[in-house]
Length: 112
Image (cartoon, rainbow, N blue to C red; front, side, top):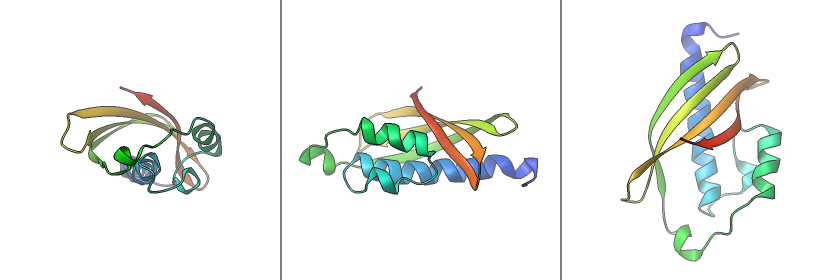
């Protein structure tokens, strides 16, 4: 079990790994199956509600600008990720994580 001081870094790394693979899938350059650090329940939900990706949207790129970690209680955390699509305005996405085997997993995605 990691020390409390390491938890924010571990949560942040899981969130960043999730976002990198989630954004690849969202832009049609990866699959939902390949999304890392997500619970099986969230992956099922994402497959069920998979977006239709236009050729124009495939050419765009969303970048992670900032990740703010908030450890809520033992075993749960929230991440506020600031994202930016191409040169457009930044926006926030909330990720809710739980500590599960083998590590931190995103359980839910929400708008900020």
